[in-house]
Length: 147
Image (tube, rainbow, N blue to C red):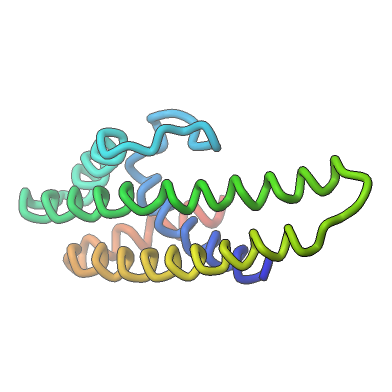
């Protein structure tokens, strides 16, 4: 289960990394970060600028970011529930495996949903870009990974 969550979190990180090309200067992205369309559109503007996107591509990118913004808060709620159930168990004198498993079963469903969103969103982002733009993304991605 944790391996599945880690894999999906890594995939989400890929999408986040692509979006970070444009978003990194807009502040910290921790638990308290406001994940809004406005914020994501600022990131999309930077991505569009760095990749020399057309207005049509930019509009498609906005629609993609809006779709992501709509879906991600549910996953964040799940992540919070999982953290809270484990925290509660360590605050308790006994460990309630049933409570933990109950929350994790729900989390698995959300992780599956998020995985599908990540794959669909990445495919859509890929389709928006020209081969030259994809090459720029690859270059930036490799540079980021080498740090």
